[in-house]
Length: 84
Image (cartoon, rainbow, N blue to C red; front, side):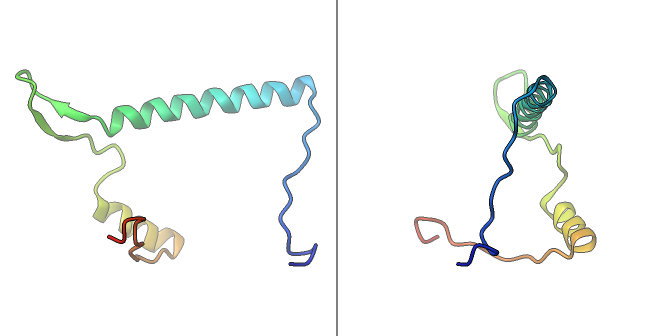
């Protein structure tokens, strides 16, 4: 691999401005993580039984269509670590 092809992360000089930007980004990431955790948590009814999952991000079919149309996405399967 030549030096031209190598990807290098930018160096960030720690100033008050960059520190605030990092803190803001960290806060946003934590908020997003909490939102996703709530969105994928199983719904419960009053007797404690699972009634399905929240669909914050829509159905698989809706997401597939959005990716195909907006981002020229392609659908494919990836084998898991256990070969399944």
